Image 1 (cartoon, rainbow, N blue to C red):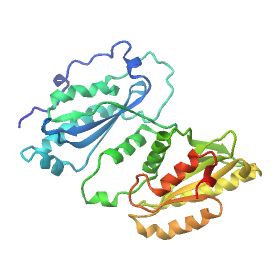
Image 2 (image 1 turned 30 degrees about the vertical axis):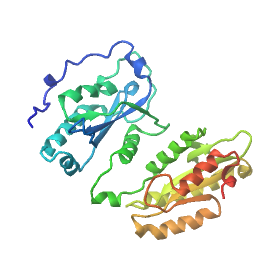
Image 3 (image 1 turned 135 degrees about the horizontal axis):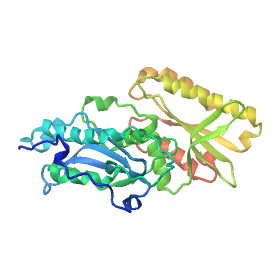
Image 4 (image 1 turned 30 degrees about the horizontal axis):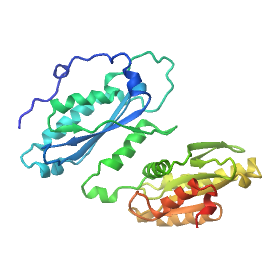
Length: 324
């Protein structure tokens, strides 16, 4: 197989400004597209090799590439030059890189400016022909929560859709971001109205909670997610101490706080990094007297019993007391 790689802009059609009204077509949404290696359309075999995130209104495009793909590519088509496929994917990544700098949603004071065409999901369609065996899934809208960066969302989607098939995957951390994505997805599936990244001012601090369900006719539920399944345990310990101080700070500001809110914490046990078990146990003891605790002790960041418990309590009008 021979293929001349894209090395200059001459390989692409002339850059054109987006057509008038194109921003209206794509709207303000953020889109994901999965890059797949498809050696033969009729056989239907494919492997995900990268993921792209784009937001036209913010002029953002980001891409993450599977770091170990050669063996999977060769397994589908032994005669293929896996290094060539890897190079093609990396060249697309290089074309999108200049747009990576704008990482967070920002309000645009001047909306008349046409978006960079590379931030439009349709920009990737040109590579379907140029690069033959590479295909791009249809653009799919994804939700980027307030306060969440595009890079954080891209990393979440990478963890969910691009699985690394090597020994390193067995030691992959179950991060807070992945857990939060799964919980949010399940809440939305049930049609639950909730809020992410809620900030409540206390006596001295701005206290942050990952998830909140503010009920008009009942007590509100506030929850935080902390993972101890990390190579570096400092962030989990720091978050635990900060959360405990937040509750004290809120009580100082409002003696009637517990009549308005109930508090929960979702703890991911150190499955892959068991050396942090003592820190996890200490946090568990400290939280049990003040928070409703949901423990995920499994090694998969999918919907677990702990996740279901948290989701059920947030979705239920009775809050945490509704779940045994």
